[in-house]
Image (cartoon, rainbow, N blue to C red; front, side, top):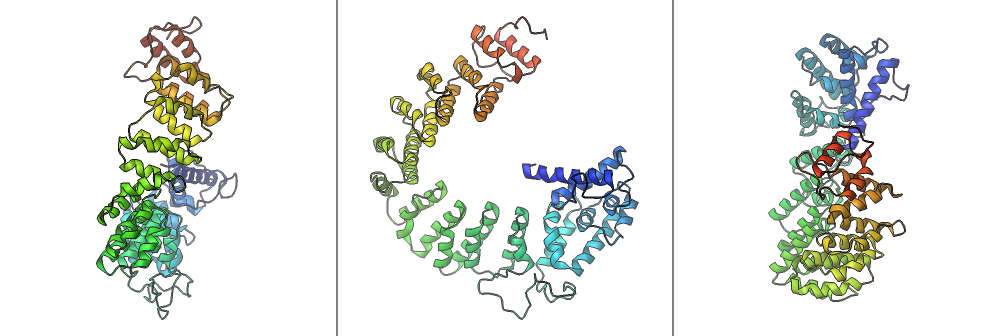
Length: 502
């Protein structure tokens, strides 16, 4: 469960506790649940409290409590209350008791008939989560059937008592793009809830009325990778089955997500727009760059030549041009990347360091000074490159760079190399940073010290080393007495005189 889901669940449990304690919402900081996971947690907490005997009588007159009661007869009776909250009614549609389940489904069906727009918009996120339960498919099927009805606007069973602003009258023509911004599906496609957006996208695409440009536009705007993939695949399928559409391709090429832009680059081939391929060789995404290299080759060109021209021109070179060049370069091209280590742009220097590492070219004398580079990105890339040869660097020189007077990014980079070096030097650096003023360094140092312990192997430290014993004495707060005793025993280090026997 993610952090946001945990927060919603906690809100639901707090609402249940508040209702059981005070008999109403709004007191003690407990509010009525709103979000899907909050309602599910609310239901579970009410039921748990009753079964454990911790539920008092204060909320017994509230329909919300009765709908979650462990006694099925009480739940079924509560469903006859016209004030029963629809989220709890939807939850009861998955109830294990058939009588409760059938009554809840009748109530939900009536609510959907009376106000389909509001019911679908409000409950779809919850219904989609409930679909994972054994009896949860009924409501999701019902909602999908409502949303895929041939004409849900004029079908009498679906028509609200008054014209709802979510519906578009049938006499009003559908726009050429296929978009109907005032429909229920339009609302669901814009939902902040990701499962709901994906659900609405699938239903919309199943209708097959959007053509080619509208899915491409939606793919370009979408920030959710799953929904974006749905829209992009639909646009590419439409492009493959018809004439090239420059508007749709341009929309894909400007998409937020790499999977969308990559689809646009591949679509350039069928449209005969090979000349645009070099423009995408420097995309920020490796996937898009790979597609652009493929397209250049399809046109008989060599992406290596394009990259080499960019890298060799200090006025035109960009960080992603350097990265792309390293992806198709050879070790003999390392001098070109080394020349960029003096470039005024930190991002270009950092990309050059990463490129040299990709070519498996590590020049210690060249990289050592870069730990002190004013660019944090350069120092980080240098530390990643030097970590593989950390044992060949002077320990004292590295330890000087984690001193408090050094820039924060230099200290982090030097510590990364020291930790990669391991042994007593790595432990010494970690213990020095356990009391550092930088909370991020303190946290990282503590985690790395704790990673020394494994029940399956001894710590990677020298045996019977007095310095190791002294350093472990400074780390006692990170381990239990039992674990510290085991570590000392494996390393042949006696306990300090003040330590109790395990």
